[in-house]
Length: 360
Ligand code: DCP
Ligand code: CA
Ligand code: CA
Image (cartoon, rainbow, N blue to C red):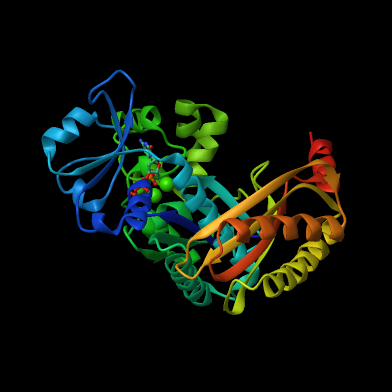
């Protein structure tokens, strides 16, 4: 793994609550609490997310709903709407894939991108990260926080460093200094148990831990973990950004010359994008089993329509035909002008999956 990588980590701000704010503008400025009701009736259940206004009252993910209601009875309490959050998550991932072919979705609201080939140095990377934030704000309508660093471990901590709407760049030379004062549990991979044991040993910060010898760490935590802790405390992490199994997709999105609902213009564009997607597939000798049509309205609402094929396909005409059908269906259901359209294929099989099997 080259040690001159540039990795970006994007984490959406107060994600579930911000999604609700986007859909209902009347919520802006009010404390909003998203709740998972247990189904046992009443307020039994836990808080899943809260916006920053609600956090001022101490309302956070994980606390009982009844307690949150005592903290602020006037907050807006809403049940989770996973379908909404998933579709907004897809919109965000789509934007990231427009910036880099190497995107690793880490959870519903965060992802790593390897932008090594897209920026010559960390100053350029900072500009690119600002563009990513703008694109997400413009196209998805949500704010996020971004970290830029030489690896995933540090990028993830950096995205959390200045929330909300943050952008933190940690250059290779600044890594040690950046990590030193932080708590050991800020390192992803140091859980509560390991953190408590380290605290018992008088180790509170990452800087404290970096001073322990590797032998001491191995003695305490075993070989694999000891070695990892030593590396992590120095901000070393070689893990690559890789697509999670099943999440890999190849797509192209473009902005139409003008907002339109003209079927011919839209289908012509889709045919061009299908050709681009096909060339990418061909390069990598992949077959696909699903095709998606993506549309973004003049109000920046994204809709996707997908179809799973009966059998894997690898030809350009299948992409075109299915994308055309999906687009026609979509426009029949939503006869409003579109701003951007896209085509995506996924559920791959082919050379790559065989290679993966061969590795084990
Ligand atoms: N989530 C949940 N239960 C938890 C933690 C999180 O249901 N205990 C859900 C709701 C969050 C989403 O996952 O909105 C993302 O989690 P984050 O930890 O990234 O937290 P937020 O995005 O809500 O806030 P932040 O702005 O701190 O990232
Ligand atoms: Ca988040
Ligand atoms: Ca997150």
